[in-house]
Image (cartoon, rainbow, N blue to C red; front, side, top):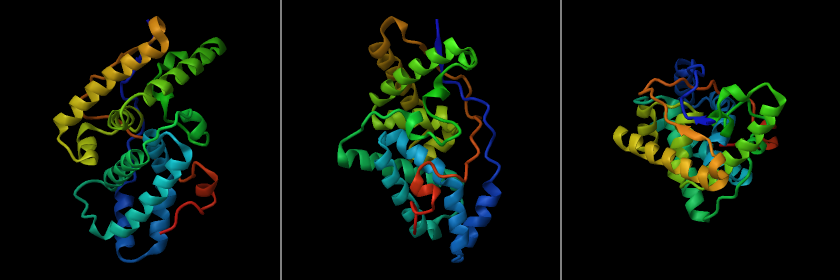
Length: 244
């Protein structure tokens, strides 16, 4: 049986936390160039997070803009008790969920289409690596990716958020709890139910051909992606998409 693995892949751990702290301190001292560096570093990642929840490119761009405005406004309150990335993630996820609830819409757009300039992320992260090179298998992978994308769209915003946090972004349970402002136990329970609902959604979409969702057995030590400085859309690539 084909399996959709939800094990956290061995991405490179973010090696920028110390540099982030330096940029944050410069921002708090009023250095606007430092803030632009933070935006350049995280704008692509923020867009991807936002799109993962709202599933609409225009809405994701709105959330991205709003997130960086909020970061600029409240950065002086950041105390460093958690990493800057976790603090930023919390802002983006909360804004995305609020946006989705306010507008009561979640259009199904292919994750890869919306993040066509991104180096990774999306439903492909939930697919087994063994389907990579053979053209026939690549075609099969593309079909399954679309089904996984549809299944993700049937999850609640909170369940979709924790799936993306853990399986795509590679956050630890502790970081997820900080981002969602709840207990680690709540995160683990929510993730369990999210995976179960993803399995049910896949069965509804694909029937007997649905792959099995495999739960990861790692506890709290995932690897995370290195953020890119390139924007996911023309507004971000040109620098017009975000301004404090």
